[in-house]
Image (cartoon, rainbow, N blue to C red; front, side, top):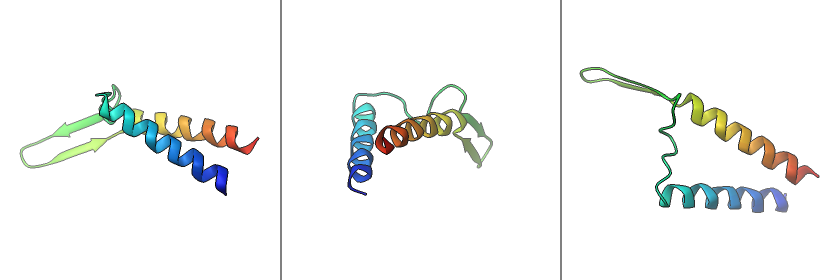
Length: 64
């Protein structure tokens, strides 16, 4: 459980650092935004795929 928590903390710190330096996480190409008069629909498809890949790789590295 310990290595998992350390890895999770490092991942959160990495994402925080990327946001701090201006990387547009959550506004990637492939994310769908539909805006109407008083309605906004945001579907972060690319962001979800990217987060899934990163978490999968992190999980595989921590499992070994």
